[in-house]
Length: 120
Ligand code: 5GP
Image (tube, rainbow, N blue to C red):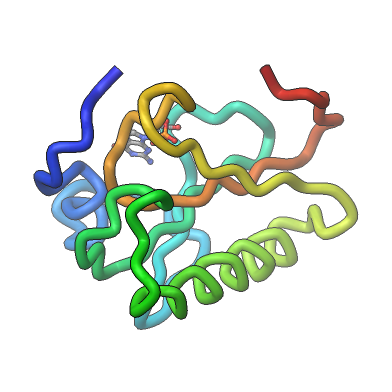
């Protein structure tokens, strides 16, 4: 498991388009692109374009609360675009115990198959 050092991550390179990604949705605040290692037929990551110290949800400050709504609403747009509005899951892995591996806040949007609960 990686640690939250606050250092820039691979997602900054994806935002800068220095490394390619398969973009599903983009606006001035958020970017949504397909996960390189998909865990479902639809697996899209939704990230803030300006990380602004947002490495993990547990470190979000009150002044940053607005971006949380932007990310969650973008997840809904992604689900609509991908045709999975009838059934999808939004996940945030927070910290090593939850298997977070990239310390740039991100939502996973998963769908296109039957999900299980609890996720394990
Ligand atoms: P986490 O485990 O931190 O919640 O999720 C990080 C996700 O980023 C993983 O699902 C992983 O497959 C994905 N990922 C890591 N590096 C890249 C990359 O370079 N491109 C894309 N598209 N996804 C990546």
